[in-house]
Length: 425
Ligand code: HAM
Image (cartoon, rainbow, N blue to C red):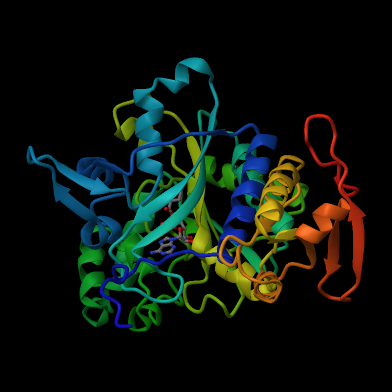
């Protein structure tokens, strides 16, 4: 069959059994968010374009190249969210969440959209799960937030993941670093890629993000940002490292890690996977402190910290680590004849109401035993209940184990309400 419709480039269907991994990621994350007192927030999938230009940053790749921006019918410029932080920060202000509590801890999950070149682990629509904490400049909140992520990794059994951290200073100390970096890069400017030549002029820090090998080769000896950050940023970073060590989280300091979004201050981090499943897209999660974004959006200066990870990337690594088998229903019911169909349907309902997964053959329902057994086998069901007219007349049914072939007779046991009391209920 020639397919008439396929999903748009950079998007994909997530189908069973991969959805089992997604469910595991979501349910485990929710449990952990609850433990750390993070509350869920849902924000719109599109926002005003201005929100991302001002927040994510007008010189970032996201804003300059990757946004799905469109006018609505009234000509207002809207953008499909490329990331969650601007929308959540807007909501924090718009919903006046700061009135409720001096510290507001939020989590979110949902699709994000970036017009990027498609490759393994990089899509145009992808899902993120993220957290944002507003109100505290305490370095322990940085570490608590990172700890959530590592507890999630641990509970999911994720292997070969490592944490890279850096401090990119604040509005007081970063300008001097930028000048120094610019000076350093000036001798090689003409050899940088076209994008980096613009970045060099507008925000030289962005050059450090460039994925082009031709640019990366000049970055080996860049000035170390740690030598430029102010006393306040240095103390903060030292404390973050101290508390990471206190809670046994291993890290590597990477002074070239600056993140591709403009709002960060002080701590930035990414977690990377060594799994071959991801190839070059080995960043699983990114985040950091952003103490100025709330005030950029017109609020009072409010320190904040957060991160987000891509669900697809995490699922890819987990899938490569372990075979996610299909999980068949515990029981499969085969019915032979009209009376048996009724008894079987009633039993099916009872099993499910007792939290026992079960399935019945709706396809070959009126067909023979052979076809139904074949179907049960295809689904991978091990326990098959066979109900025939003969069995009903004798007040019993057959329980067959598809692996051993063993068959046992069990009596039907109706109560005065007409419910069956099966031995395994
Ligand atoms: P980000 O580094 O742009 O940060 O994205 C976070 C994660 O989203 C990445 O590490 C990656 O796993 C996933 N991701 C990004 N782009 C794609 C893509 N095209 N395809 C698949 N996965 C992708 C942010 O978005 C910040 N909002 C994080 C944050 C929250 N910072 C503070 N709070």
